[in-house]
Length: 147
Image: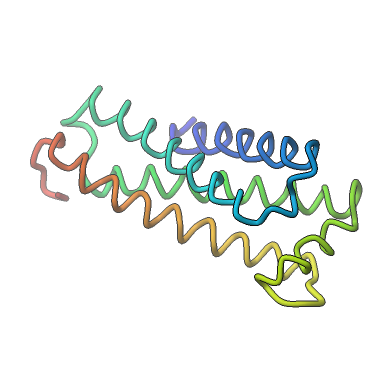
């Protein structure tokens, strides 16, 4: 299995665990704690790129590194959004009220709107994080045609 997908699944598990931890301790209303989602995502992308590029700098080009980070991000965010859909539809339908109360996204939100919002926010964040990290790691990549 592709390392980006494997690390993406592990990242999704970490995001889900963090979500459930916040729910368990009643912290889901603290919107500012969502910043740790970016820390989890950024940490996972860093670990993947660090391990792959330092292990085989000739085998991973700049665009290959970007691709790995983006695959990790898309996998993690899609799995997390699917988890949220199951959570809202079968476990806690009132969670959408918490999202609406945060006043970040507006009122009368549907699960589809929340899913698209999280998907866009997560993927864009992951692409930006990947691009930033690749600026650091490109010094470790051997020059290739795609660099």
